[in-house]
Length: 476
Image (cartoon, rainbow, N blue to C red; front, side, top):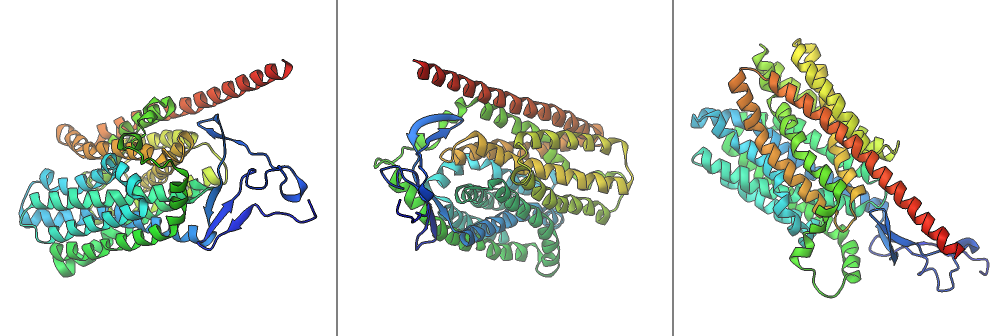
């Protein structure tokens, strides 16, 4: 070296930071500050692939903030709209004079399709890329709400709001997680926690927004205004498309010239990943009952003699606590480096204890405290699940892994309403629902704890085996 140091990070005109590998620092192996830069083999799923690492492109800090804020707004709109339908539900029930079971399909299908639709939307998002998929989702959700404003009956509302708008928001919701995982090279857990916190804020704001708009414009005007709000998905998608375009252009240049087939884009080899499969199959079991706790918490309070305003405040307390829990989940991973499976395990066990307390305590103050605790713990679980998937999969397969996870969770969300409602109709109360939620939480928490310990043991055994082989080769 001649006394000058070479920078490993280069800022390009399009806002990218290029982190150069040892190969790019010079063929002679010299690097910054007179040290030798070694080109490390890439590691996938804990095993070296034997291939040299390619240059890693990273967006500038200001660009990351804009993308993360956009994804947070997307979750704010998606989950806020879905949970805010509970307020519109009451007026529609009176206007069309239909049964609660039939009318509730509008909201339950919308919530379920936002998640379960990922099974269909996942490969499309992977093909179109997050920004373009958000634009498509914004158009579909806008069309669905416009159609709902002219609905002559509940069946049309179920189709327009439950399916069309739900699928549109599925594109946007899934794309926000994929874009966050793609943009953030470090501190991905903090990014997931922030966009999940946006969902909690939306769940708190939209019911109040719908209540005010309904009083002025009625339910038809509410859906028409919501169509205009959903147009923001297109704006946010266009912004994300422009900001993330350099990353995806770089990925395209590195790929083979042959176009990837549809079957390969499904990443079906994920189903050979045993830890991922165990983690995936646990999701519908968990949310089948805990989604019911969130949906029916208002009715639980009403059956115990509290008025609608006091009962609704339980749901508001839970959604506000969800914001704090989301930030806590991100801190556990980013600041304290707590393994996400341990976070899931501990949060589920605590949630199980809180569910059991709902059976024995009926005073309003205690129920508020339990609702806040539920909101915090379920938010930690919500945040820890995508973080755990990041650690179980590779960046190339993360979108597919997330799609399958959201898909199964969404199917359980759809089933949770009828199951919990049937428990109430047959037994006359919700005690059995809380008992089942407690048992599921404790069992799943134990499974996640065992899964984390098992994966650690596998990784340790593989590292010891590799070191032993290298030692033998050295001696020979």
